[in-house]
Image (cartoon, rainbow, N blue to C red; front, top):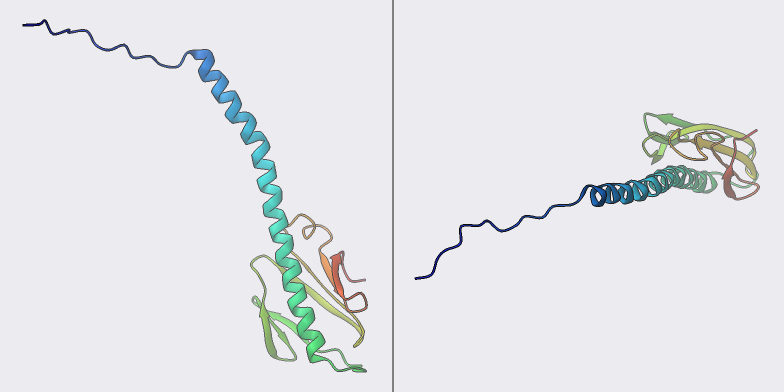
Length: 140
């Protein structure tokens, strides 16, 4: 018969410097990844504001006729946006809509903000009918 060994197999763990090196690498990766992630989240909030403004602007363009002098009534109740009493869209969570600045059917502006956005937190976004595009800033 053969003798059975009673020795336990050797268990090898990480040395202290290997552990510190691993922690350092993970910390550096987190230090780079977290700010990039936060910036992308803020860009997403800005995109929500722009998308909401473009939807509202398209509905205003569709509702007004050329030469219309009277401003349509743009109102927000909760998150529901109505134009002349007809619901047109629902604002995304966190988006606040400004007032409709009206001169004519070809010259009006509406703005919105989202405090969690990168640009939308400070200057917000505006849609000017004369420019036919959404840009940063508020209606004057």
